[in-house]
Image (cartoon, rainbow, N blue to C red; front, side, top):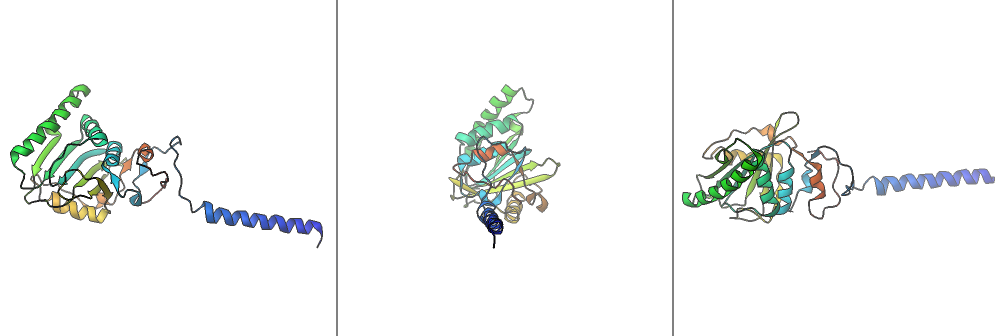
Length: 240
């Protein structure tokens, strides 16, 4: 075997090792989204990534869902939002997005009226600043369910996608008998539909929902991917 053959064999071996390293260590790594990287115009909710997110992080998501029409909260009681959640409420009311709160049966109407006044005050301020003709009463509703709610809070986000289709995503809190939980996890579509169908069909003002809207992935401003806690590695492309 001459020196040329030895060089060729060596180069082939090195090339094979480089290909093996790329397949094993590079392709299996999730895509890293750096804070200053250029992101696409629209991102999709990655199902596995949205587990145990904080209430503050949920507020960041709530502010960045595209095509948001309505936010529906089913909980034991109403609780005043703070930080990012409060910012999300103010921003969304300014953009004429409706908020419906469905709370446990045992809370007196006088208590609910107090919370209504608080949310109406927020709505009035932001709508006046925006010069909107919508009335606060048309955007905020707080009602009793027909039964005691001894479960964790649930949040449903109803949106319209860029294709004009209705899509709904739901999150479940981790604390029983609270209005706002410490952490939330996104529910699979089939589970979200079953819960929404049971809750909303028996609400004081029944809402019609259909299963397909829970199978569509809601669109979100990709900037939120750089704001969700310490999660530095998030798949840039993920299917529902």
